[in-house]
Length: 220
Image 1 (cartoon, rainbow, N blue to C red):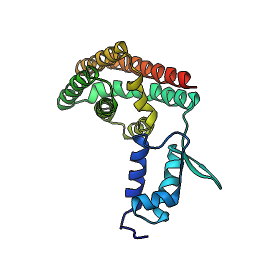
Image 2: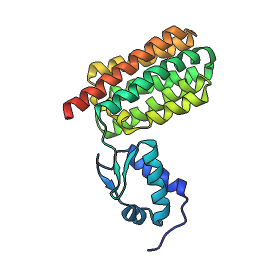
Image 3: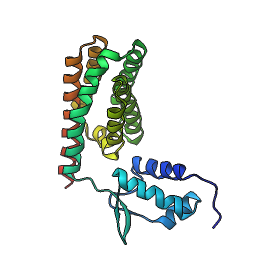
Image 4: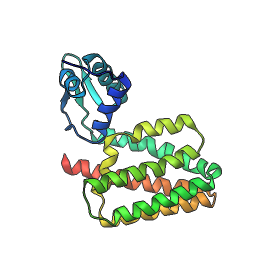
């Protein structure tokens, strides 16, 4: 088989992006040989990428069986949101003391963009647009806290594909509440009010948790 020159990092990113976009079914096995052929590489960088994705929690690596896409249990979701509820409101409070005017302006733009998206028709493109804008919104806030280690820990949890389920499960009332909370978070940060920013962020995450858990319970 002809292969192209591709770094291990590029192979890792390609497979992770496919996982982020839920292109593989839950529980599906990812075969080294098949992935190597699809990506035009040898099996070595694929093997390394699967090992790395297993260590990060994207895959379940089973000796003698291979790697398969992780199935999310109720406990998995509960643990991730428990960690988010501990870390993210704290970072929002810190951000209130450090965030810049330019960052506030960008947050306002993103909140406005998400309101327009939420008012649009449902579908895969709508979900992707909301997910991208929402990720940027929260990334600005956690980065503004100026605590790189906690910021990186939080990012690793929020890259998991289960976070994308949230918007799909939202009712019209859920979307309205989420939109309102985004604007309230921006106002709290602009006012430099750390307790307010923490409180709204905590409510925002708790509502998202309920949406995802309700979906899992309904599909179990």
